[in-house]
Image (cartoon, rainbow, N blue to C red; front, side, top):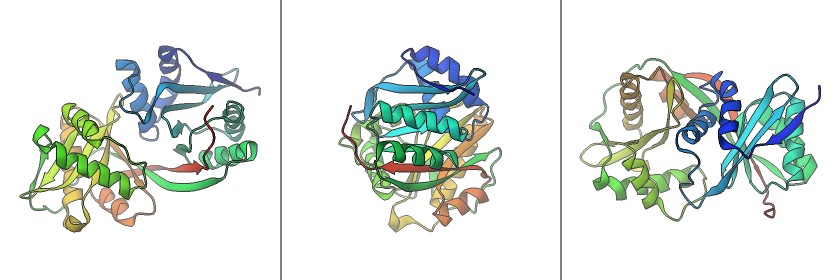
Length: 289
């Protein structure tokens, strides 16, 4: 079956073409769907220096259908759907041919391991499994034992605290450290997506992002070390999930580091059920195109 890699210059066409594929599995592709949903509604507007001036939009297609989609808005990270091995090889050949300068690929197992193997063989860049992921979906909330304090939506008055939490979250998860967390905090707060658990003072954060047709993804869940083990994170995620369901969402999604037993356990106790596993593969640096 002949396969061809297509790089899309027309943003609207790409969104329309990949939408049916992505929305077949909203939970598994919640990251991809959230990015495409944003681009469908607002076009492509880079939010920070960490994003590309123009997104990289790729599909691998056979005569019958789209076999996979790949999209990159961040300078470092390419998000890829699952696909069979030959489709992954086709994508790897295309990335090697264009001297792809990103460092990370993220997507569903085992497709990402196949893609990482093919790409390393073709380009010679060393690969490393950086993060093992588990994706979850929640349909209804089981409230955990109550923790002291309450959830509140972050406001402009919380901008410094929220920006600090964002930076600490990235440091904890090994993400690249940005230059301007204050602007990022201002944007998330201004969009009404930032929440804090407060017990006399802010003791944790969470945010929602990546809306899908029927769901929404929760991310950025962070509790500073001195406040952990008191139920703040589970209560914040449970209350935020319930709020989002009450507003009309059918599902909430989130993903966790598979090697973190604490987060995987607390989310399942409040109603999140695993849908699939994923991975982030990191490659040694390459010279930009």
